[in-house]
Structure formats: structure tokens, C-alpha cells
Image (cartoon, rainbow over all chains, first blue to last red; front, side, top):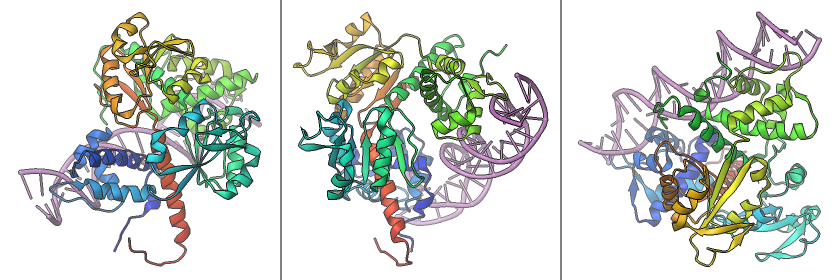
Length: 226
Length: 226
DNA sequence: AGATGTGAAATACTTCACAGCA
DNA sequence: TGCTGTGAAGTATTTCACATCT
């Protein structure tokens, strides 16, 4: 009598992987694949099969011993947990190059997300249209958000104003934030903030390149498992 | 004789944080701050002070007991490890909205990265200029890359061709890849791939929103059947 | 046979707490 | 006194390995 397990105890790393699994399963389903083993899924996701099985067992057991998981069912189950299919209105704060790029990003509508509002502080932009959405002034957020409240916000503003915008968003009830601005945002602990910092990712790659060159002296084959 | 510690053993999570610290330190230096404590750095980075000290100790010790770390020196040290300051030519494969947004992204040049080439498969784009760079056809990669070899590549192409592009990049010697396309790239194990998947990040946030609502309904012991 | 689901062991990472230096 | 650097303890996550089911 447990339709689902204790979702509160799912480790953050597992949650990230669920999103990966979901993407892979969507692709497998589109390709007409009916079943997949933990090993197969693991290979696509770049993790171990034990890791996959442990993750999936957290949502409850629905694999078939001897054959694996039914792609459609597994995708459905993970999708439910991730909230795919529900109404997910997303607002974008900061309509610069990056914000505009997101407007036409296919993954947004494909994932069931719907842009509900655009905000900017530039008077030249406010009132104009971008991809069919009227750009509102960020100070108008409380009123504009009342009409069609966002549950997720994407911050693509300059770093300097990101914290201020985050505070405004929190105050109107937005709790999930995807932050592209290269600053650490501080909000009450019930907010969930995901940071996507291109500059930081490049630095991490740069580190690996530096290490690669340093290791060229000691020419050993260090194999990372996992 | 240990001017620096065993860099091979630095945990991946620490490496990510080094990039964060570096960003914060750059900002502090620009603001004229001379020294910073592990506690101060921790607050900006959103981690604990013990975590900061442990991380920094992996690069060797250079704090001053009683006062903290010298901002300029610490930034310099971390920058060395991350490879900041060296020549880091970056090419961008896929000059759509996202690729264009990256061209003007300040974090790129600020981090010491230099765009060395742009690639696209669209004949209408090839030969045109974007932000001062001529767009080359992706099939021309081997030749174009020879002139000014990239060490890092950013893939902002459609998902369907991302794996093909990744293979081409690998074959001309690029080992560090920042992938925006929503697919898992498979390359030999000496390649380092970082994925920035906006759709996946939104799914993770969506999960948290879903869980938040589920908890709100969990006031009663009512049994929901799925 | 072949693959899941999961205790138990191993490993990775974080935090405590304090000796030791400026 | 104040803050770093680090053993030791604690917590989180991964992997092993195998009983269990189809």
C-alpha cells in the first residue's frame, strides 16, 4: 500500500538525475523502444546501473525482473514526480540577448512550461513586444503577476540587480528560481534556486584543460569510474 | 617540495566551488577589499566557512591566521589552478539565438576566454559576420581550427546534430566541451563535458514545486490513490 | 538465465572542534 | 584575541553483491 515512497528523502543528486532519465526516456519512447534495462539507461545517462536502480527504487518499484523497465510507464512515473504536464507558468526577468534566446528555446514548451510574463527595467523595452509577449516594467511585477501568477522565474538580468529582482519575485510568491546572473542569490530557505553560470562552467573546463597539460608530464592513464 | 597539493585528488564539487570563489574574489578585488575571511567568503558563496577552508587548503595554505586571506593573492592562486590568464581560445558551434547571446556575454572575455571561431551548418549564415567573427561551415572545422585551434568548444546547436559536432570537435583535438544541447554526448573518456540544459533545470525546479504542493496537501492523513 | 530491488560495505563529502600561529 | 588548517566525527551518496522474482 505504498503508491509512492518518501519523496522528502530523495537526495538532491537523484533529483537531478531524474530529469536526465526523463529526457532519455522521452527520446527512447520517440524511437519506438519499448523496454530498457538499468544498464542501458545508465549508459545513456553516464552513470552506473546500480545508481539507476537505486534512484528508481526511490519512486517505488516498477521494473520487471528479468526484462527491465517499460519505457512509457517509467517515463510517466518520473514525469509525475517532476511535475511534467501540469501548468507551469514561467516568467523571465531580463529581456537581453539571453532572455530573448530563451523565448524561442524549444525545451521550454516541450517540457510543458509556458511563458506567462516578461520583465525588464529598460524604459526603451517596456511596452514593446518580444515573441508575442508584452514586456512589463520590473516594478510592475506585483500587479502583472497577479493576473497570471508565475510558479517559476528565470533571472537573466545583469548581476547587479539580480538579488533585488529575486527579492521582488519572492515577495509575490515565486519560490523556484533559475538564475543566469553570476551572483549568489540569498532568499529564505523555502526558496529553491538553481544557478546556470556560463562563465563558471567555462572556468571549470579551463581547470580540466590546465590539469590535462600538467599531467602530460606524468603520462599515466587515470580512469574515472562513474 | 609541495608548492601545490595533489590536484588530481581535488573533489569535483570543490572544483566547482573554486570557480565560484574566483568570481567572488574578482568582485571583492574590484571593490577594493584587501582581505577576506573564510566566513566572509562562505557567506557570498552560500556554503559554510569550514567548507571554504577545507577547499582552499587543497591548493596549499596561504591564509593568515588571525586575519584571513589576502584577496589578490587568493584570487591569483585559484586563478592559476583554474587556468585563468592563459590563452583560452573558445569556439562556438551553432550560431542561433543562444550562440549569439553568448557572443556578447561579458563573462566570456572577463574570464579570459577568447572566441576563436564560429560554426554553423546553415548556408544562409555561413560567410556572414556575427559580432566581428566570420561564421564558418561546420564541415570546414578541421581547416578553420588549424589556423587558431580551440581548447574549449561550446555547442549551441540543435540536439539532433550535437553528437555529430562533438565527434568532429574531438577529432580535431578539442577535449573540453560545454554542451547546451539537450542530449547526452558520448566521447572518449579523456574528454570533459559539462552540460547546461535549461529544460532539465526547469524540470528540477518543477519537481520542487510539485513536492511543495504535495506537502501542502499532506495536512491530513487522507489516502490518495494514483 | 537475466534483471530488479536493496541490505550492507565502501567511498565521498561536510562539519565539528580545537590546536596553533599571527 | 581571531582566524586558519586539519584530524576526527558525522552525514550523504555510491557501489557491491546477492536474494528474489519473472
